[in-house]
Image (tube, rainbow, N blue to C red):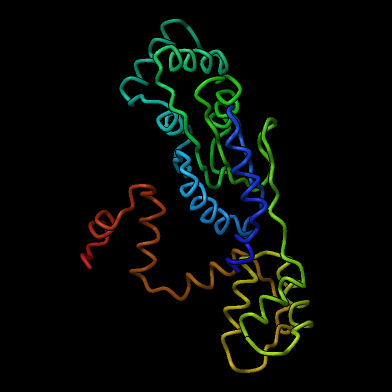
Length: 275
């Protein structure tokens, strides 16, 4: 499935062509949960590195309401102390309106030559607050030199001024080819691919679950038994979490709470397990 989801070389090629333009801009990759965004993210990340494009990755933190500085620190050479001082100056000047503040920040970064030409690969943009989204759209319209690009993975379109790429669902024929590739035999698997497509509604995460559950077994594949069941991303996660022991569940909770700081050393200290 990773091969299907990330093998859309035309989409990857078009995205890279778009961000190589000598202008700032936003590129949105649109796909619902389970559509294969993670696979495409990995392939695109690799291709951007191979193309010698200066990229930085940003994953929004669900616990941070305003993530403006998280974005600014990636596009400009400014630390948190200097940024706080800048906000204090804005307060002294009685700059309170959102776009007035965006202009004030942008002018300062530009006048001080602090802006960095960079491409930001932003995963799961739906977690980003509206205020920061508005700044992203503003800064890409404001900057004319030292272009700043954003490639944002979103579940639905978010930005008015963006180039949009929609992730397509696998067809029944795609699924049939995938099954035959896995089984490596001469069966056509027409009915099986139709049933998987009906059960999953093209959701790659669900398709992967069904394939893992059945196609590695030697017995006859029986997808009919799943037609009347409710299978979605949440039920699959719930099933997998229920199979974990208490220590594993605690680790997941620590990762969820700590976010970007959840490295191996931190997790070992929190869990009390040095292994």
